[in-house]
Length: 509
Image 1 (tube, rainbow, N blue to C red):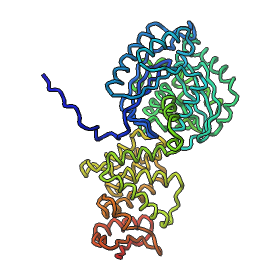
Image 2 (image 1 turned 180 degrees about the vertical axis):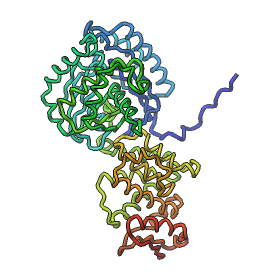
Image 3 (image 1 turned 180 degrees about the horizontal axis):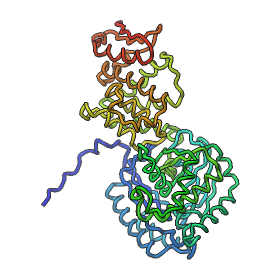
Image 4 (image 1 turned 45 degrees about the vertical axis):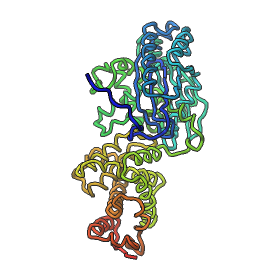
């Protein structure tokens, strides 16, 4: 008989102290999902995530009712979710329901049973409210979002315009995958007519021209994953994945034309979701035709994250989601979190005197890279660069696009291995522009100077500034820090100086 594990005397060291976990139970038309988060913050970190494809909205359009077997499946899932919340010690549960529950005649009966199981009030969202929360999810997950948000669920499609934090009134249409399958009686040809008719009611789609279209919803993310596999894309992170509208149009046509099970890598899509791919592709194709966006950007954040973002105070909402996440990972995994913060100021001084121009976005990414520069220190020295690159490239960061991920990952990779490209995956490198690759090498080289000077400990960099002065790259070592001078320090300083076309000197003051 196994011995019982002792009760932990303190919280897990790999988690931040944000108080008790919180959770959202999302009762959608296709899936019923529980997501428990470490705490309510600008950078949401799920500690448990599970969905059950119950298909509540499967027959609502034709019968007006939630299917009995779907109701049974959903209630069983909710009983499990309630117990899981108790096990996780969730303090607060927010429960929401969407199109199927608000449209079905027996929706109130189901909600009453579900509330009793969950032990929480379930907010049955109106279409406009659902659109608003979807938009807030995108606002929370993208830095300066600009475009039309489209949230495709099982029962409905919500459309809403976003510019930064400004959100216009949204619209809801009965074009969710299950609803469209039901309305069309599984005829893709008729489904296309329904989509064309419904979208004609939204003339404001034209304001999406040459902007982003943010695709929210599990079935659209499934299409994105398929396209990633088809094209050999180096990352498998759906959030922030951006595809030119023309390419999306062509792939959407393919998905609706062929049997889903014949598509390459179809195994990355759940069996229950595969029949809905063609309907989701029809909606996406027609939206791209009508709105004419420049690109389609896939979002992993939607109604749930929008709900929690709305609960934050304004100061928290204004925080940069990427930097908030980088600060957290720095706190959890670096030898000295304060050193990462000092590295930001140290590289600020270097960049401001270097003669290299830097955009606001590039500066933001550099700051994130400084915070993440030491997260791989526990690995074997031969693998720190590779491990750090993989963590950053695949982390659940938001507020960043994929080229930005590549820049940060490459900068930290170079910081560990030196300016050696032989060990670097060419696929990740391909995500960065020539300019970003050059800046990643410069930043990586600067970090190499900083870490060999400071030993990754706080309190050193503020007294050992590195600036370009009179055409020379100068590292100044003052007072007791003069003893830090050495051949290794000078070798790394000279390497950086060559990258920016300067002469390297160490000044002892």
